Image 1 (cartoon, rainbow, N blue to C red):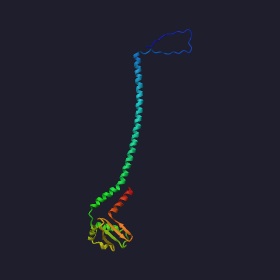
Image 2: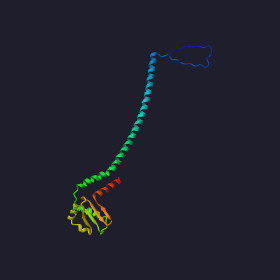
Image 3: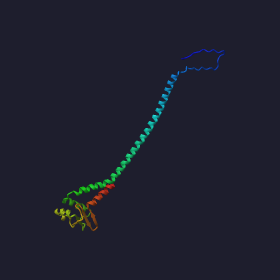
Amino acid sequence: MICTHTITFNTPLRDASFTRYEASLSVSQQIELARKEGYESGREDAERFYNMQLVDYRKELASLHENLGESLDREYQSMLSEFKARMPSIVVSLLKKVWAHLEWEGDDIRSMVDEALMAYAPGESPLEVYLSPMDMTLFEEMEVKGQYGSVIFKEDLSLKQGDCLVKSRFGLLDGRLETKLRRVEAELSANI
C-alpha cells in the first residue's frame, strides 16, 4: 500500500532529497520473507559444501586410482621377477621328467656320440668314449664302432642312459644329461 501526502514549504528547498518508504510488512509477510531468505542461504551453503565434498572425493579417487596403478605395476614387476627366477628350474625339471621316460635307440646313442666327438679334431687320439651299459649295448648292436677309427669305447657303470663322457689327452668332456641340463638352465637364466 502506497501513501501519498502533500507537503508545502515557505521557502524553496535547497539540496533536498526524497526517500520513498514502503509500507511495513505484516508479521506473516516478514516470517515468509525470512523463511525464503533462510532457505536460499541454506541451499547456497549446502551447495558450496557438497561442491567442496565432490572436489575432495575426486581428489581422493584420483589418488586411489594412481596408487592402484602403481600397486599393480609393482605387483606385476614382482611376479615377473619371480617367474624369471623360477622359469629355468621349471623348464629343466620338465626336461628331466621327459628324458626319464624316453626310450633310447641306437641312432640316438650314435647322434650323442657324434655330437660329443665334434669337439675334437678328426683323427685326434687317443680318445675314449664312456657310455652307460645300456647305451653301450645299443651302440654295439649298430655295428658302427669301426667308423670311429681309433676311438675306444668303454662302459661306465656310474653313467645313466643318455650320458656320455669323452676323455682325451686334454681332459674330460662331460656330456652327461645332468650337465647338459645345467647348461640349459644357466643359458635360460642368463637370457631372461
